Image (tube, rainbow, N blue to C red; front, side, top):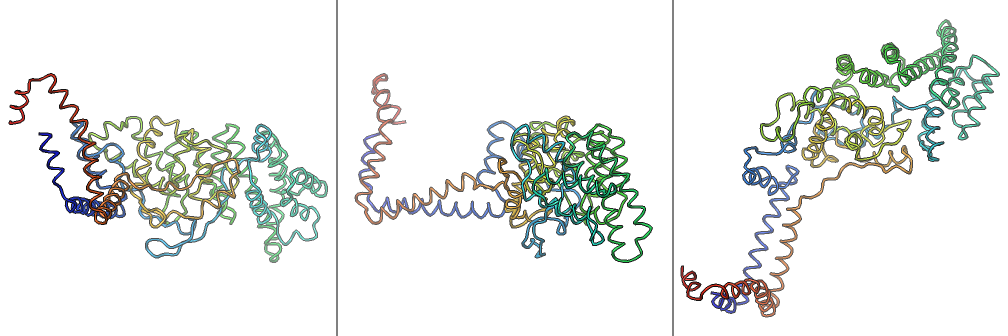
Length: 527
C-alpha cells in the first residue's frame, strides 16, 4: 500500500502541483472575500458564527443556538428610541443620517470633589497631583464667568477675586480670599474659595459655606430690589443668583458626604426647580439621582430618571447607566448565563440587556471600572461626555450602588461586550447615538493626570478566521507562483515534504507488522 502511494507521488508532474496550488489559492481567496464581506456587514466572522451557533451546541449536546453572550449580542441597544444627543455629545463629524455633529464639549463634573478636603488629602498621601493645570484653568474660567460681572469694576474686593481664581499658587489664592473678606466681609465668592481650598475636612467646608450662605442671601435680596435699574444692576443680580445657587448646591453635597441623605435629597430637589442659566452647567439632577440611589429609593430614582431621560435632552453616563441598573435590578439576582443560553432571555432580561447595550454604546469605558478590571482614581473637576473622564466620574460614585444590587455586576459582565458586536464600526455609525467621537482621547489626556492610563474606544480586532484565510490565500498564491516559475525544483520539494509527512505513518506500519502476522495485514489491505 505504501509502495503504491510512493509510486503515485513519483508519477505526479509539475503541472499537477501548479494546478493544485492555483486551485487552493483561488478557493482560499474566495473564502477570504466572503469572510471580509460578512465581517464588514455584520461585524463578526461567518465561520466563527457557524461553529459557535451550530457545531459547538451539537458537539456539547445542547439545543441552544448560542451562549449567553450570543443571546445578548443581537439584542437591541436601547430603550427610548433613537436619541439625538447632538447638542451635548462630543465629537465632530457627520452622523449616519448626514447631520452635522458638534465639536467636543467639556462639562463641569456635577459630583466634583472639594480641593482642600479631598484632592489635597490625596496629594498629601501619594505626592501625586490629582488635578491637571488644564482642568483647574477651566474651573477658574467657570468661577470668573459666574462669580464676577461688570458691576464689580472699581470694587477692590471683587477685583482681587477676579485674579484670585486664576492664581496658580493655592496659598496665594487663599491669601487673596482672606484679603477680600477683610475689605468686605460680605464678599461671598471669597468664602466659596476658602470652603473649596482652605477647609481640610467636609465639616469645616460646610461651616464656611453656611457663613457664605447668609452673606449670599443678603446680597441676593439687595440686588433683587435694584435689578431693573439697568444692565449693570441686572448683571450684579445674575452674579448674586449664581453665587447663591452654587453655595446651596455645595451645602447639599456636604450633607450627602456627611450621611444626611434626606436633607441632601430635599436640597437637591429644591435646586432642580430653579431656572437660572447656571443650572444648565451644574446638572444637579445627577446629584439627586446619586443621593436617591444611596438611599435605595429606587422608585423615586426612576421618577427622576423618567423626567430627564428624554429623547430631546442631553444624555450622560449617569442617566444611561442608572437606567440600566434599575432595569437590571428586576432580574439580576436570578440571572444565570448557563440557564439563559439554554432557554433564551426572558422579556425582562432582554429589557435589562438592551439598557446595558444602550449605556455601553454611550460610554464604553464605564464597565471596566465597574467590574474593577481597571483601577479608579479621583475624578477630575471637568468631564468629557462619552470619554474616560466621564467614566471615571461615574464609576467613582456609583460603583457601590451596583454592588448593592445582587447580580447586577454579573449581568453587566456577561452582556456588555455584546455591544461591540452590534457596532462593528462605531467611529462611522452608531445604533442609538451619534458615532463615537474621535476627539475624546486628546481631551481626556488634558483632563486626567499623567499617572493615569487613559482608556480608548475598544478597537474591534479582525476575527481569527479572516486572518487565517488571508494567510492561507497568500501562502498558496506564493506556492502557485513559485511552482509556475520553477516547476521541477518545486515538484522535488513537494515530494520531499510529502515523504516527511508520510514518514511517521511508515514507522507506524513497520511497528504494526512486527506484532501482527503479514498474512493478516494482507487480508486487511485487500478489504
